[in-house]
Length: 191
Image (spheres, helix red, strand yellow):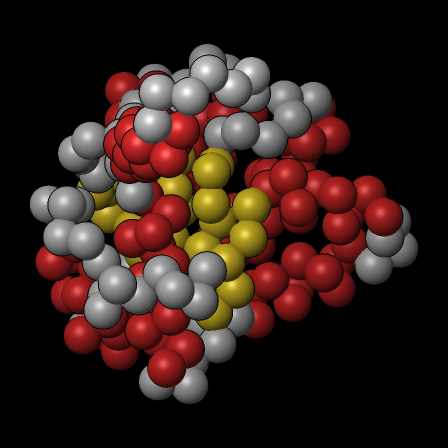
């Protein structure tokens, strides 16, 4: 994700100015425990948006951790005795970015660990950026109390930003297909 920078941005994300603003106002964001909840359709650049913030802050020598709950849950399962220390390390970063929130396992254990991480971050009073394909409607109207406890903390800590635009992955796939057609130039090849 090192190439996920403002300099490499293709200009197709209409909300990218909010990423710039976050970095420019970092000290205030940190002091007020303000994060972003980046939501929107698949492939619209939410992770790239968050990665740009992470890389810009790291250039200023501010420690940032960008991860996802699939990795967190795997790490927690592998270190039964070190769970509290692991979560404490996540809360030690000035900025924590959780990518693809809502894609983790829906087990009772998984939900409990998601709550533990979100609640610990909430209590640490440090900013959090979350990317998700969940809609704002889903976040505001959770299916049960367990989800409500998590979503309530997220929506308090994070300002909601809807990331709009075209699906970048579909556009890339189409461009690759066009290049392949040009390369093959009418030759019939089984792929």
